[in-house]
Amino acid sequence: MSSGYVARRIAVFFLIVWLAASLNFLLPHTANVNPVRQRLARLQAFGVASGVTATRASGEEKSLFEETVKTWERKFGLDQPLWKQYVRYMGDIARFDLGFSIVNFPASVLRMILQALPWTVMVIGLATIFSFILGSMLGALMVWRRDSTMLKVIGPPILALSAIPYYLLGIGLIFILAFTWQFFPLSGGYDYGTIPDVSWNFIRQAGHHAILPALSIVLAQIGFWGLHMRGMMVTVQEEDYMQLAEAKGLKGTRLFLRYAVRNAILPQATNLALTLGLIITQGVLVEVVFSYPGIGTLLFSAIRNLDFFVINGIVFIIVLSVGLATLIIDLLNPILDPRIRYQQA
Amino acid sequence: MNSAIRWTGQNRLLTAGLVIVIILLLISLIGPYLIDEQGTKIGYAMPDQGPGREFLLGTDTVGRQILPTIITGMPLTLRVGVIAGGLGLAIGVILGFVSGFYSGLPDLIIRGSADTLLTVPVLLLLVVVASTLTSALTVNMEALLLAGLTWMGPTRIIRSQVLSMRERAYVDVARASGANGFQIIFIELIPNLLPYIAVSFVGAVAQAILGSIGIEALGLGPQNENTLGMTIYWSLYHSSVVRGLWWWWAPPIIVIVLLFIGLFLMSAGLDRIANPRLRKIT
Image (tube, rainbow over all chains, first blue to last red; front, side):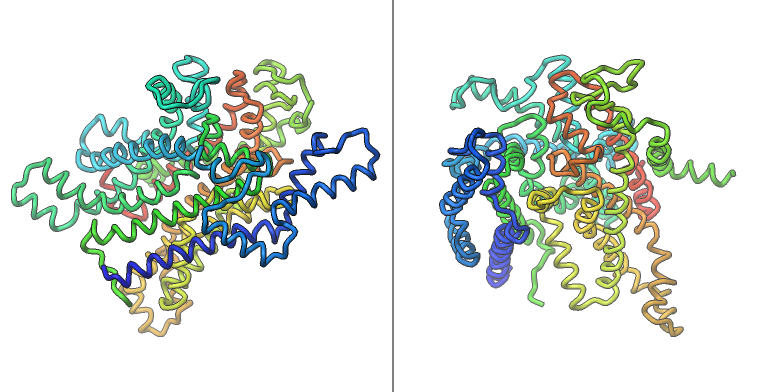
C-alpha cells in the first residue's frame, strides 16, 4: 500500500463529504422549502406563534406573521444571498457546528445528536456485531456440516427471516413479549421518570429495555450474514488449497477454522464495516417502533415537526460515518487480505 | 405433465415462492371488486371495533374498516414494487451491458456511480427527498423515486456476467461469423442471461417494496392513499400495539411478511438455476 494510495483515498473521503454537505444544503433550497415559514405556519395553525392570537383581525395577524418570519429568518441567517449562506454553512460544518433546532430552540443540533448517539451505537452496534458472529457461524456450518439434521431444520427458516424488515419483527416481539406476556417493557430506553446516570441500577434498567430492540435486529440479521457466508463457503470449499490441506491430513477443526472460515470471512468483514457505518439508518424504524431514545427517534420526530436543521444535521452525521467506514475498510483491506494490491493504473 | 411435476420437485423453493406471490397477486387483482370500497373511508363505522360478524377484521381508530383497507392497499404497494423494480431493472440491464461490453471510460463512470450509490443509505436519501417535497407524494411518484435507487444491484450482476460471457468461445464464433455488437448482445448474451435478469428483477422489486414501506412507516409516504406501509404508519401513529388493537397492525404486517418471504424464496430458487454450484447445498 503506497502512501500515494492513502493520500488519494483520504482525498476521496473529503470529496464525498463535501458533495454530501452541498447536496444537503442545496436540496431544500431548490425545492423552495422555507423551514422557518413552514414551522411558524404550523405553530400558527395551533395558535401558539408568538404574539398571534386567534382573536386578532386577520390582516393584522398576517402582518404580524410576516414580521415573525422575518425575525426568525434573520436569526437563522436565511435572509442572506444564497452563496453567502452556502459559505457560512460550509464553515459551520467544518467546525461541526450544525446549527440550532427550530423546534427545541435554543438546543443545538449537535448536542441533541450527541445525546441520542450512544443509545443507537450501543444497542444497534452490539446487535449487529452479535448477529455477524452468529450468522457467519451458521452459514459456515450449513456448508461444512451439510448432513446435520438440526441445521437442516433450523437453518433455512432463519435464513428466510432475513427477508423481513427489522421493525416489523419488532412490532411482533412487542406484542408477544411485552404486551401479552409482559416480560419486557413496552417502549423507551429506561423506566419513565428516572434520570439517566452511571449507576448499576440504571445500567440494568437500560439493558432490560434494550433486549427487545436488539433481538429484533439480531433475528433479522443472522440470516443476512448466514446467506453471504454460505455463498462464500461454497466457493472456498472448491479451492485447490482446501484439497491440499485435506490431503495433508489436517484435523477437521483446523481445516474448518484456519482454512475455510479464514478465507470466507474476508468479504464478510468488509460488509460488517459497511453495515456498522449504516448503523444509524439500519435502526431508524426499530427505534421508532420501540420509541427508543436514539438517533432514529430523533430523526422521526424532526421529520414530523419539520425541524429541517435537525434532519440536515443527522443526514450529515450519517454520511460522515458511512464515509469513514468505507475509508477504514479500504485502508484495512490490503492488510487483512495480502492478495489485494492497489496499483496505480 | 410429468415433466412439470419433475420441474416442481427440482425447484421447490421457486415453486413455493411463486405460489405465495401469485396468490397475493390474485387477491389484489380480484379483491377490490369483491369488497365495498366505502369501507376504507374515514368515519365509515364505529371506531376500534374488534373483528366480528359485521366487520370481518374490525375497524381502526378513525372508523375505517381494516379488511377493505388492506385489500385496496395491496395492489398499490405491489404497483410501487413492480414499477420501481421494473424501471430499476431496465436501467440496470442497459447500464450493465454498456459497462461490461464496452469497457473503458463508460465502465469506469457507471461502476463508480453504482458503487458509490450502493454505500449511501437508501432510506436516508428517500427521507431527504421526500421531506423536501412540498406537494403530497403520489404512489407513482414514489415508484419513480425508488426506481432511481434500485438500479445498482442489477447493474452489478449483469455487468459481471457480461464480463465473463464476452470471453466465451461462442461469442468469438459469433464475432468471427460477422455478427455486430447488437446481434451478439441480443442473440448470444441475453438468452444466457435470463436467469440472472430474473433474479435481478425479483431482487429489485423486493428492494423497492422494502424502501416504500420504510418511508411510508416514517410518515413520508402518500398521505391520501392507503398503501400497506401507510396503514402501518397510522397504526403506529395511534399506538395500536400498546392499545391491544392487534387486528389493525397485524394484517398489513402479515401480508408484507408473506410477500417478502415469497419474493425471497423465488430469488433463492432462481439463484439455484443461475448458479448451479448452490444446488449442492439444501
